[in-house]
Structure formats: structure tokens, C-alpha cells
Image 1: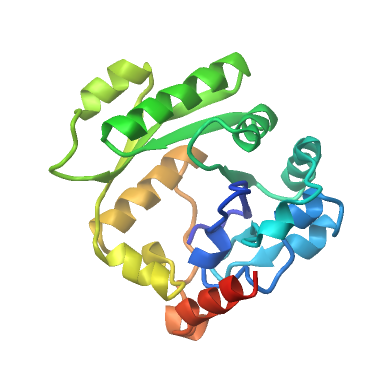
Image 2: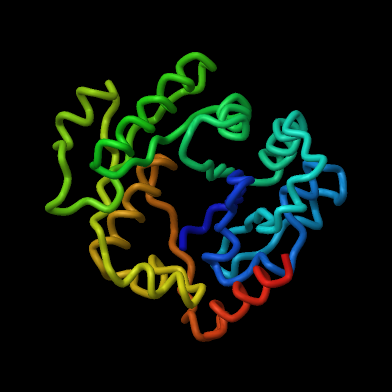
Length: 235
């Protein structure tokens, strides 16, 4: 991965999945706890094992209790003092968490699939970003393939934004997520991984030095599904 100090914040409060997809996050504090004042920010930071940190969400329903989204901007401000890049992953839709996240961020990136429902959702997010004066860098087309209903050129015309990357659909990605492995690291030579890394290069404005890649077997085990099921049973 690139040698840039990066933080990923899972702002999908209703159904967080960043920590789970990385094979961890079930045994740590969460953004929910920090927003609710139940824990301090430093306790919610977890090393992904891939040269970036994350603040995961909490998958339990009870974690939503006493959350104060007004604290989100202060949390992100503190993170920008320690990290070169802070990525806030928001859910689809235009809920309060999405709006608060957009309002607190300097810029945004619209990630859509080339299907009608995703395009409509992306246009709504684009409109909210305009109203909040949040700079929109561009659009990423995710899971592209033969089934797309609209071309890259028409996407750019519709959104009034450049498409800065296209990530093709790859059936292997889900199997890697099941094991808590990062596909772009463990299968770095694939077209999908190359497309994702090109987007990262374009976003930071230069091609940074890459750090040594770590084999997934050194940092992950094969019990990811068991951990998730166990956590869900305890909700």
C-alpha cells in the first residue's frame, strides 16, 4: 500500500462494515462509542494491518443509543491533525449521518455503479454536496461490466463531473472479503486492483512510494465468518 498516513472512518452508522471487511473491528471500540461520549477517540483507532488506520462502526443495535452527530465534525478535525488523508465512508442515501459527513469534509467522491438506482442516489448526494459547498472531485464507476446502462461519457455529462476511475466487477472480491483480506493487496496484479490504485494516485496528486506488501496469511486467519456470526448472535 502507499506510504501515506491514512485514516478510514466508517460513517455508516446503521450498517457499518469497514472493520468487518478487513477482518477486525469486532473487538475494538467504535465511532458509535466516540459519538455517544462512551469512549475517547484514541481507543476507537485500529491498525488495519495494511499501513492505514480505521475507526470502525459497531454492528450492534444498542450502539446507536445516545449518538450525537454534532460531535462528528470535531472528531474529523482532530484526525486531520494526525493524518495526511482522512477518508469518510458513508452509506447510500441522504440520511443525517451522510449530510453531517459531507458538511464536515473538505471534498467528496461519488462512487456509483452503472445502474439506474445507483445513479439516482449519486445525483442526490451530488446535489447535497453542492448545497453544503463541499468540493466534488469526481465520480468513480464501481463494478463495471457488460450490464451497465449508461456510458462513462454520459455519466460525466449527467453529473457534470469527470469520471476519475472505473473498477470492473470481479467475482473474486467477495471471497477475499469473506476471509477479511484486502483484495488490492493480496491480488495486486489484477485489473481491479490496478484500477483502484490508479484512483488513489490521482486523488493524492502524485505516485507515492509503495511499502512492502504483506501476505494476507501473516495477518489474517480463516475464521472471519465465524467471528461475524458469533458477534451477531450476541446482539
